[in-house]
Image (tube, rainbow over all chains, first blue to last red; front, side, top):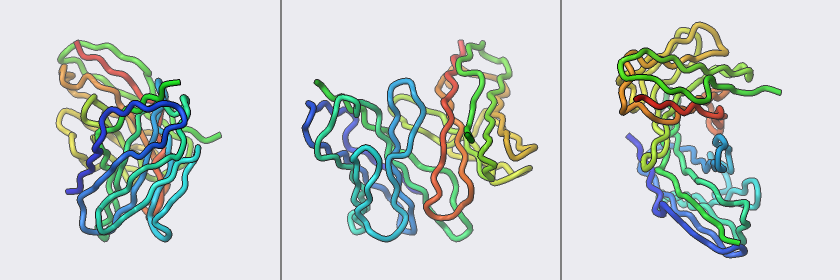
Amino acid sequence: AQSVSQHNHHVILSEAASLELGCNYSYGGTVNLFWYVQYPGQHLQLLLKYFSGDPLVKGIKGFEAEFIKSKFSFNLRKPSVQWSDTAEYFCAVKAYSGGGADGLTFGKGTHLIIQP
Amino acid sequence: DAEITQSPRHKITETGRQVTLACHQTWNHNNMFWYRQDLGHGLRLIHYSYGVHDTNKGEVSDGYSVSRSNTEDLPLTLESAASSQTSVYFCASSERQLQGDEQFFGPGTRLTVL
């Protein structure tokens, strides 16, 4: 079974700082990769996804992520964070095994706090 | 606009009671999913369905059941609620099983079992 590891459980940054959140997965086959964000009191929203093509994907709100297959990684980046980026961030993987995919496997999440 | 709704948004119940959480989507999606979110665990898959009358167990299915009688609804039932089932429950849906399909999430139900 696949698993997802997010290295940073709590991150505190100042506004305008650069952000990189680590995500590694374990699965040897075809995967789709996602980053979801959960703002306080709200439901999960998709930030970006990778399923094929250019391994550098751009999402909403200035976020991007790079899929490095050899490292089984899909790290999330943003060059300059804002106070409104304070949220919980989840990396997720969907593994494909011929007949289709089951649900998403999520990492434990990273709680990001941006200080003004 | 199409959406996915959950009810109730908050529920307090007692140990041993049966509880049903509703999930309704107007996307006309084939696939529906139930997750629970717990501190330190992220989201974990409980049950999922690929279509009417189809149900499948996820990672943490013990103590839960689902049924799919139509495309729009996937209710989650806790047969005999336990304190360990205190959690936030999210329903999600996706259109197909093709690569790149994303899941859309509902607003969540916060369940407390006393």
